[in-house]
Structure formats: C-alpha cells, structure tokens
Length: 69
Image (cartoon, rainbow, N blue to C red; front, side):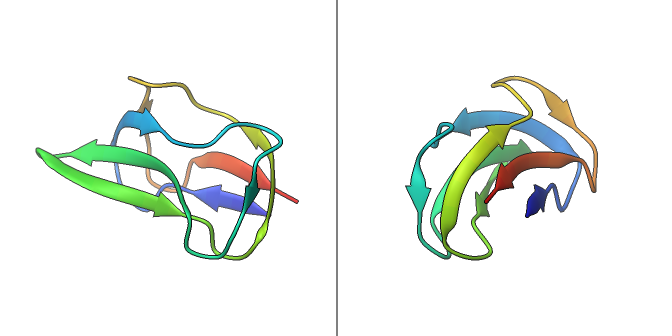
C-alpha cells in the first residue's frame, strides 16, 4: 500500500524507518507547508517496506512517500 502526500510541502521529519511495525493512524513523517506541520499517518496497520523521500525533500501532491506491506 502506498502512502501519498496530500499537499505540496517539504519533509520536515521522518519518524519511521523500513522494517517498523505501525498501527493505523501512527505518524510516519511530518511535512511542513506554509509554516504548518502536517502529520502523514498510516492508513492501516502494517510494516514499513520503503521510505521514498528523505528529510528536507520537497514533495508534490500525490507523490508516494512511504510503501507499507
């Protein structure tokens, strides 16, 4: 399952890493947009398979940030 950015912003902080078990609604990373911090959460429980961005990256709306399995 792919977790995508809901808005344009920059990756402020990544709070998970590949191999982590996450529960539904756990925060995977925090995006910053227009001086606001927006948490990116897991849509369902699973394991983090891949993180496709790094801190300070600028992301586009709809860009895949994290892959869960």
